[in-house]
Image (cartoon, rainbow, N blue to C red; front, side):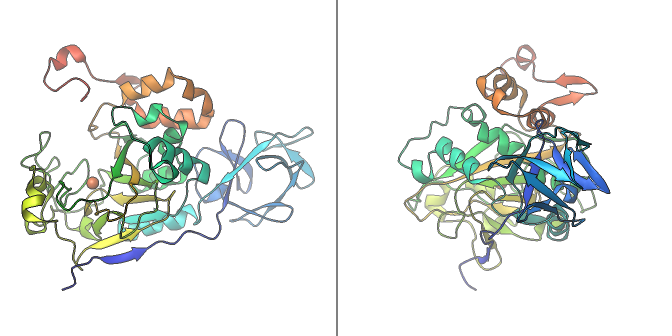
Length: 394
Ligand SMILES: [Fe+2]
């Protein structure tokens, strides 16, 4: 048996579709007639043409007039479009932005069929560069990352990665609910060059299942009991590749298809519980990484969305440069989050970065970071917590 995982390489796309937004950040699309949509499904996907933009589903072409690189007036059947997508005399400026490489419905179908999908380089290059800067990777590799800082407060690109619209649409469809939440504030996973003995992550399923991390983990022992698989999905993971993810720099290693088994990864593969023990790797070597496992290579700016039950572990970085990702566990509203996201969210909305988000992004960030009981926000109570866990952990 080979001692290397099977490698699946997702290439950097040669072209991307276009998303067109009004001043609120909502999407221009067509559903028999031009309209404004809150969701990034197939109805809002456009292709750039010589004269403007072609609506992919309907083939309808809009003419772009007075275009700059980023903003333009749009003409439909000889009339300008207003911000509400109705024809009018004056017209409104629309923002032209980086879109996905694949139709959202196609990515959703892949996620449903395989339990994972990669949206290759779905984040624009400027967002990726900002994330590199915050994580001290890429061109900023020589800088030192301060893990005490909350990424959300460092650059608006972190909030933009959390509100990326195509991944949110497919996640909502996959979990069969519009009400999805982040289970923790977005956090970086930064992997430096391996020294051959440092502690590493063992095989596990992600939040809320946490299969394979049970036993020694302070929060949970198989947080969701192992159970036979049905149509209900209790969590997906959204990993944003800040760096290119390669076989050499620590791309995540999966056991693809394992979400259908309804059980924890085999102990003999070296699970998360075993590898929590300090020095375990130095004594026992790396967890399983042979040909029964799969490594997904993906270009920077990609978002890998996978069913949280899929067994996986972090890869090993053999290169000199650090590899970064933004990790986001996403859950339906009826699952208790891992950490309280409201503190980070409140700090964000009282800070200067809020002004950089448009209304659509603000509403999305609110919806994924504030848990509600009916109309009331649910948050932690420091008094009732009474030192049950250390300050800063809730
Ligand atoms: Fe994980």
